[in-house]
Image (cartoon, rainbow, N blue to C red; front, side, top):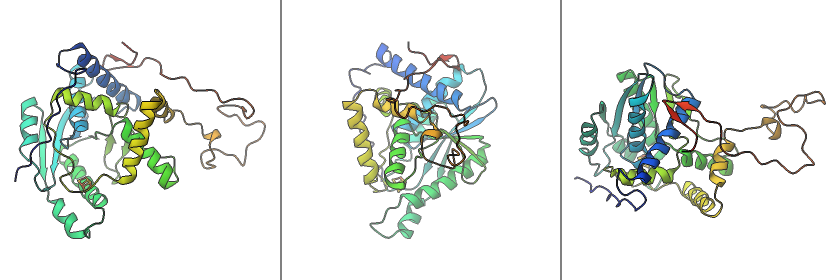
Length: 309
Ligand code: SF4
């Protein structure tokens, strides 16, 4: 059975036309954000092979496009291999991604593994399947990375995914923990990067609509998005609507952690604190808190400036 592709939304007036100034500004903004994240975390260097995981959703298409565009003007030489894992979910349109990769001329691997049947077999009906499914998928991605000689595995998580994870962990896990832009894989053999870490989901969605990517629906497995994540997404979207700048400030806060002003004794020696202890920020207990400065200095990477146009 061939699934109908999710209808491509008509490009809104803001992004209509891939040659409009609005679209070109959006493209530049995304590429600049990706360039900054790559530079800030030293994600990609000369000679790297980057395995880009493409699911057929808006985020991974955008990730691939930005990396290909940046490679064109990068002062370093790196190889990109796009990868899709066909998990044999019912109705998965397995012709779409090979045709897309061919059309843009990128090197690619399609890996077919019936993890869907394994998951259905092992997990009782009604129970959530995502943890086993993603464990299996992770193993296959790591194996493919080794096979193609990849030194980096690029995933399409963006700024809003990272913030949702932060709040999920705070609300339900009792931890201040998000998704890092760069990490070592749990098998210790690969470096995983998230080059969209600074990109807003809304910008990615607008870009993807204008690009008219052949989007593959993400609900083929029949699993619903986690209800808690859905609630947090709605909370963040509400804040973005009602309090302009709040989401940007939250994202900035992940880069400005002050251990002496939290309460984790593993990160700061509260027990050994004396009047002589040097702290990053002094005693402001009786003063109103200073609001952090938004924005940052101009960074250059791949010839792209992080400053505003
Ligand atoms: S939503 Fe479906 S495909 Fe995605 S991890 Fe969960 S079970 Fe797997």
